[in-house]
Figure 1 (cartoon, one colour):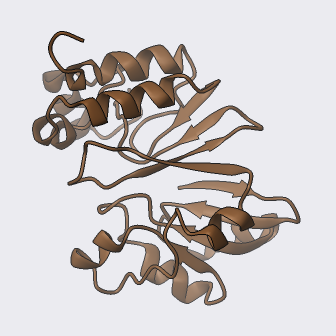
Figure 2 (cartoon, helix red, strand yellow):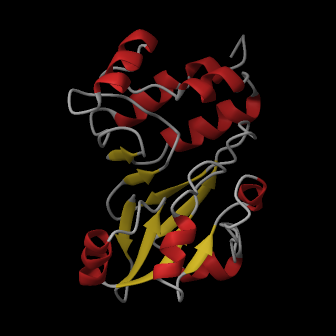
Length: 203
């Protein structure tokens, strides 16, 4: 989960984690939870419970998520003018060419942070041994790579290549994803390298 405090103190909560009493107390200490963001078709599991804890919060996300979880009912899409006008600090950018994921990432210009869910992943020594083992076998231990299903189901295309190039051209200082520590060492270069497979032959 990533949390951004917007102008005026409202909280923008990306890919909510389980809304335990401890988590909710920490959120309440920061401000009012105003937005619950479902970034793609897969990061939705804790959204219904979080929405129940914060009934005034607006759920934002792709319509495609409802096919996987009918309990998730986004009120707005990330390209809705009402949402974009209310959250000018965060620029939504849809990752094209990866339809099964249907992910939108968000650039927070003030901190140079690209906020995503399944754009990249990697494991480290603090992770559970099962994931460390899988990560070593799959080349994702202490290396930023795309998740295995993203790599398997994404084909090289102009749409995907141009979309990743657009992200790499941003003034990135860090990339925040769901399944890795913050990526702060050459974030644009690591993103480009991980997605090199999506560049069509001859490009």
